[in-house]
Length: 479
Image: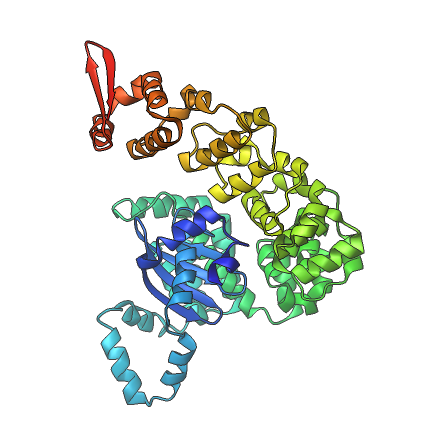
């Protein structure tokens, strides 16, 4: 069930890598409707997964929807993890002395608690904000993040204003400060992370129409207001006056029951991508919009997210619409259509291309080629240096079509950049399917590959195949 849900947000390759990282999850806790995990990679990464959308954020260089987020979600599905809500509920039942004992145990591991407590004793935070702006430092940046509740709305806006206008200078200063730390990663963007945290807090603080007006005039919180459209719906008249048509369209699409006529009125040519994205996040809305706007591309994308093979085939002419947006994965389309066991030849031709070949699984290749009878087309669209497990399915189909596959193995590019263990698999296949005589021909044809790897020659001996270089001439003996 977990992996099926993930496939709508993550590619199969990312999911596969995430499955291998489940044991790298060092900690995982549920806070509200989010998972917060630490996953060991080349570093220990902080990962957050939204349990509504399954989208992930991560401190790794990849940034979001990565293998670490997949690992965290799969770990959550597999293991019983702590829920912060239960812990907080238990804390509320404790008396003062019991709470003090818990804090005393935590302090040695969390010395920053003392620093935060000292910071919170300050009385004039307006003065502190002014000092921060005049004398920026990394430590003070951390103080703000750890004690956001100490500042009022106006002070947070003032800090964000300063950071937004001086981002390059601050980043340069931070980079210099971090140079002495081995853990510093060029992929890190501490100012971006700080601004993200600050914006989240400001969004939570907005309670009046006037405050909405303040942040909209500055324009740097527009995306956050779009993402929280349901909360800001009551201020839609103010939002509309400040937003462009595209921004307001995105805002409408993020609400539960948007006015379809308003969506149509704010939809500009070339901006249909927002409708497709909305359909991904809300299939029911996508279906309503497809009907209201009489949009076949929307019908196609809805069918894709519903895994509806019949309508994917019916509206397949719209497939090219989504290639530029990378919103659909051809391998998933093939998998969905395969459930119906029928692949029209023209659609098989469209999907079986070099562009997608290496994204496919063995089953994808098998199902696609089953519908294709043109051997030249198959050969033209096969990536010859792809994994042999994929090429093997192509070979099987070519043999079914009575094509002599021996020349297939004698293409120079067929052996490009192959690891010795894959070459051993190829040799085994040829020996079993095409015979010892052709295997000898194959080795001699690709003699450079077989001469350069002593590891390969050593492992071929175990298969009864002995290769020698005698006076510059390749000698092959097969037992």
